[in-house]
Image (spheres, rainbow, N blue to C red):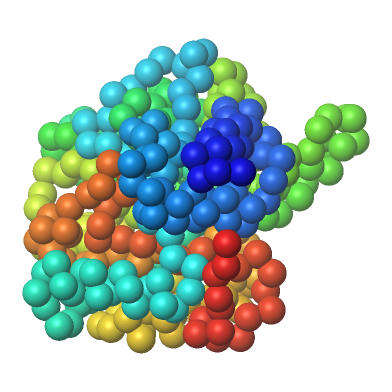
Length: 324
Ligand code: NAD
């Protein structure tokens, strides 16, 4: 097979898997297989830039909007994240950040990468008026009524003007196991994993279904706010002060070695959590630095998502070798 054909075959597979995952909420391959194919495509396109097209899955946010829902235009795009699979990917990210900023020390916020779906919540004069999915990054689905069934989402907050916050809606492990038990009893197809169960529950036209599914949320970003802060960590503290649920396991790290140590800790500790995480998100803390680093069409250059290996036989990150 020539390179052109190889690229076409990879794109075709990834488009099919995106459809199964984002539209049908029923993936047919594990995430690790999807990630492996995506890395192969990224590498081939890097080697042969003349074969890279603007519709490639490597440059587009994967989601799709279902016609049954009212569409929502995101004021600020809801993007994906670049991925890291080992310590050397993380060190390369750290080097890129330092080189671009011309700095020798960077503070990073490490957060658990919750395996759910990204949602946006908009408040007008403190009142929750709109909830949306990420969709294709520019246009999402209006799922306000379904999100209102999540008890940890405040319907009123003490904020003036317009406030848009972002986070991950998810289904706790216990709720997922119970839901699948009931589905099997009723001869219904079980959900593949809590992520797909959460996405399937929130993209229902009848909000009574979502209400029964015991979903939860962690907020992790501010899209638009009536206040300005200097760091991502202070925006998270601001979310806490308004009564939003943020994840308390986050840590401020002053070096990439600290980041790697945090990841190693969570690689073993993650099974203790009562919700699933599929990695660790590493974000440059300083907002001015984030602005200087900017975005690609698909993801911010100031953040990276480390993905846990599919099989947990790893002791230190330095040992992990990602191969395609
Ligand atoms: P991503 O999952 O690599 O990262 C971006 C997402 O991380 C954000 O949109 C947000 O929803 C989430 N997130 C969780 N915690 C976060 C935090 N603390 N801070 C910021 N973001 C946080 O990228 P993606 O584009 O959403 O999805 C691609 C991934 O989905 C693939 O790598 C694969 O794992 C999976 N996928 C699987 C299949 C399949 O067939 N199995 C198909 C498509 C996608």
